Length: 202
Image (cartoon, rainbow, N blue to C red; front, side, top):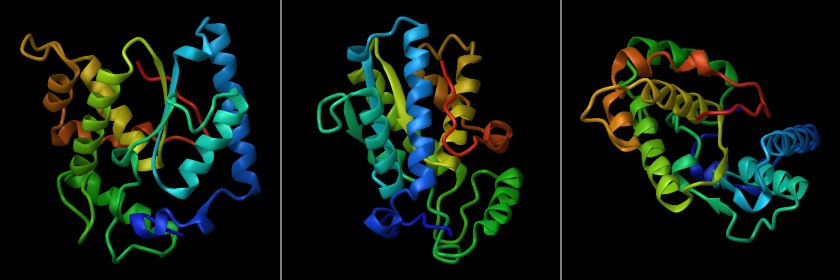
């Protein structure tokens, strides 16, 4: 069921089911393995997560797996990481409806579903989240806990920004701004993730 409005997303009854808890535990173990393989100490890890119930619950499970204090300074809720709002005409309907929106995204990532957010709207708030992380967590490894659409849009802009060679784009914010164009944003489905998947982005 599509629950993308914040009012629905934060409701406690929409926390993880038992299968989701298992996936979060596995993700935490895989992340811990990556940290050890790369000699990254836990004190250098930060976790930023969406305020929605299922992502908050995921972050809690992962923090427990990593032995990080969830209420401490290493874990931070960020409004800008919330789920993409698909609009009232899609809310509480089947996930099958996503394909309609993704087809619209491919034609024009600046078009909003009625009352909802476009790909570029999400890219804009993710750019803000990245700016906050960059200023607050320099030198840290950051685990971002968010949702399918925001995560694939985040990867799209970061992947394109990493290839941005314009001399005027010498900081992350400028590089992200430069790649917020239809030909790049319309390809966000190329970065789709599996549920509970961890993917490195540099």
